[in-house]
Image (tube, rainbow, N blue to C red; front, side):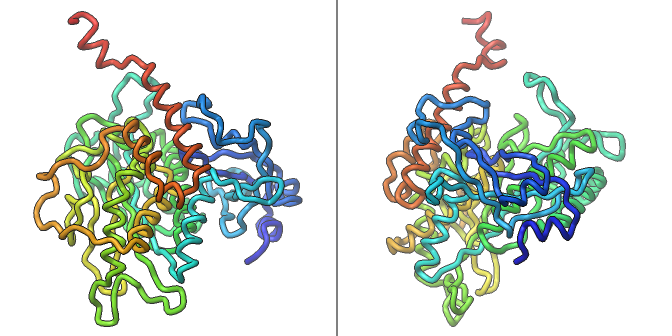
Length: 444
């Protein structure tokens, strides 16, 4: 692997965007002259950034960081370096890992949480393989938060007014945007697979090719940034909110996951005859048992729970089934070597590092605890009761009470994450909504 300074020199890079994903998956960091950045191949950032809420505030509970509010040493990962294709000057972007001055990793950093889970797999001779699928909406520019979102006008001069699932013509309405996304992603080595029009108005889904979990988390992190940038350049917004429109389906981040033996490269979910293995069933069982406790990671915002609605193409429980899209856990039709589990619980608003880490952690616990799953469901899971938490407050409580997940994800991380989400929840409870003004102002 080439070094960061050599990579920058070969491409005459003049600036570097030094990035670190925060708890919400927002890119924090610095923009630096390339020669200055390459002297250290990193930067210093306040540790307190890991407690920054999506509202730009800090929570009351700050026990998760050093009270001196010192700096983290952020080191660039050379494997993550990419061009910024929309920049006017030759610009690189590098994703960073966070350390204390003594060299210890910062436990609360999302990228470290994923590394921590992957290390557990590696210690047993396993390597996870993942493939995220990300849904998003494109909408007209909206500068007034009280004003509902609307689909943008396409090439025909009209906005979508009905459901257009899998419509090629509906995708082509926004051909300039799609071309920009694909060109930008190719320049960044973000490996896209398929593109479809989802069921919502101007809602799309793009699948990433399967591969190494950390690399795919990096790609998903950069992909969300890329799509928003591509849309802005065409006077549109792209949003990964879980439920941006009242009468439209929500947007998900489905995670396909399997596990291979490091020595042989064999998918451990299939035996030599192509049949399911006990580890396959145990992985499903772990997801069934621990997904509710990890729900605040898959549904990290108040808005996230508006997506978890019966009959709206989102799971409401942790049933599993073969090629059953009503269940929270779907086993797609595939050859034995490609046998995998699709976790359909997560929203598109989830931090990809944390969502992938939590999904793999649940499956890992199932395998080491040798759990047994329920029977696969043949009918509709929408006919069955909810088994997922109804809101963020309940989800955070379940995470705080789940010792096995805390041990895998890290006590320091869970303390920091729940503090951030508590702060956001407290901020939300202070807001008076338009619904309250409409129905309560003169009627109660």
